[in-house]
Length: 240
Image (cartoon, rainbow, N blue to C red):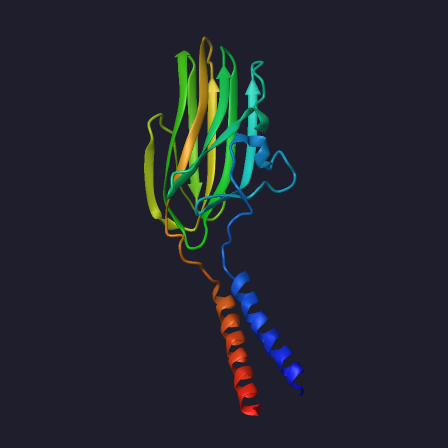
């Protein structure tokens, strides 16, 4: 084998090892930063048929956004475009604030369900969540809410469901790589009243995020590639 061929073979070995190093890191950060604006810019599915956007805040990645809504008594049907999102960028406690704008008069109601998943990137783990909502009531009007977080999917590994308070409350949990969030809010005017649900905010205290994490299988492949590179270097040295 010529020196040029040996050099080319060695270069390919080095390139393969570097490729494994760069591609096996998981999970990776999202391609875009979560932004403030209309919830329709997050392309929630449903109602969209294609997957929603995936975005990041700090060491957290948000995705799998969804949206459902109902209305009765002549109240307008909420849409993703009628809901706005503001990002919370507190380092180590990032989150999202949703302006729902629900308003119900007598014999009217508006309901919104928002879903999304949040995961840690580059070794970060979610160690809890904090949430609260803002709203008002008069007469027979009332607000109702249900907040569920799960560790496996939107319907499995669910720890519990609770009513969202108007004062911030924090729940500490065993550190998780991923949480699935379902938040449901109802504004109902009753027979002679009004209700408004302005919005809710959810933040996710998180730890770590400074050390890249590699999949075990990728580590095996990477080590194999490095051993091959070392062998090629040894052969080249012996042939001199």
